[in-house]
Image (tube, rainbow, N blue to C red):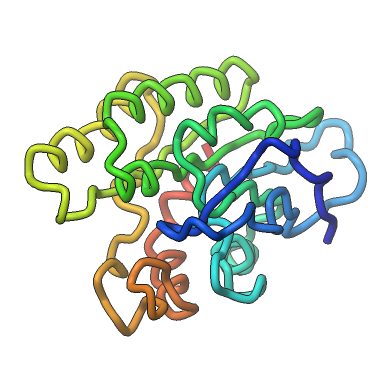
Length: 227
């Protein structure tokens, strides 16, 4: 296990709605480092970048219970041989993800990237149109770097009203269709609003909630990586 270099000092993060949360220290954490290069004639092992917020960073959980580690183990049990890079920053918005994208890609670009941003845009009531522009730019830049992207969607908080929710929720399918990339419609599917699957803040999944997320996302992510 290795840890990436620290992010630029200008990058800041807040916990999902908590202003006092600094950038999660697990940014750039490599869950499984593979030594050496593939043997000539063999298919290169995939490297999956998780570009997200506290949901991928593992806010409030030990590293072993966070989404990247649980996903890594589930993929290994399914025969996956590769590397997962956790580029999740607690409190990050789609704008923050775009701003640090080149740094997250680094000098050795991943083969694949799961983009899981937008939850904090919704929690802060930011304009869905700005989020759409940011996600559009992220996917375009990933494709320009020969990184295959997958998009994970989010649903707007219900307290922001129907009109905002309709505008917000429609963004993910529209951007995924524009770029012809796989879409997992709702990252928190099966977990949101269930007190048994969330931490006391009611927002971040606990260990059991992460297990549900991984179980539901495993098949789509496997198809994505095998394509």
